[in-house]
Length: 387
Image (tube, rainbow, N blue to C red; front, side, top):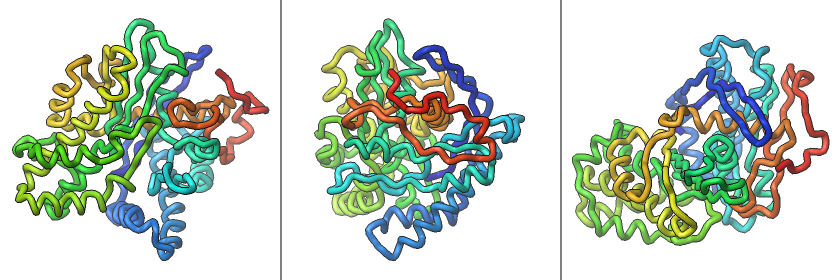
């Protein structure tokens, strides 16, 4: 919830192969007031009094998304008339795959984006998977397979966003061989602890410099790793509902009771992210075969303390960042949803049922026409699964 990532890409298709040519990328921070409203909503989703605020935020975020898209176009030297599609993931404020009625909620009204930019917009990708019994996440493994698969090397692509998730692609494997799931917190707990321990002065531990000055408290770390999410077998996904503000508030109370200093707490929750990731690979991936390379993307890869901890946890593989294979770790998630938008108008199913737990593969996303709609060629009128 720090800001909006907007990438401009040119997509080339050849059979099952996709290549992405990056034309531009911007990150547009949310205004402080908007970010506070988003965080407040995630803390109070169960309150009916929040309904009008959620509705208003949906349109407000849509305006900010449209502005970010237009800014990315300008910085790329392009006009809206030169853009075929916008793929918009939306801002997640609620994800409940294990509830009585599975659901997910992303804000950022696509009708606003399509109207302000004039560009046909594909959005709301997750509900289609949930509708056929899936968790609606993770969805990027489809893209990871298209971009990272290798004939001789088994690779994992690991996103360190607020929530951490991995995609494992065995050497020479097919889409049906891909394993992917959320491993637990990425930056979300670290950032919230940093914000609380600094009285709101710092939103994140930049570079992991504060955690580096602390000492990992193993007794608290062992307790944190007992959370039932970590032992649950995939398919699985999570979010702030399990590891958000309420979770951190309880964690802070426990740390205070144990007399743990702020820097030690930051070191411990950083180790918590690293250890939970290492455990995820050992429990659910390594038993399937070797892992030659793990490439990290997302903001967490800039936390040097976290990456050093991960290198120790993941000593069974080469650990690097996606820049090594020619991609931008900041832009990759935005680029992925551009590609998913392209797959939608091609009529290609883009969820992996083995990954999400869905009954079958389906086309993801809802198409909202822009002024250029007649120029968008829907190549599959029946929207059949294409494998």
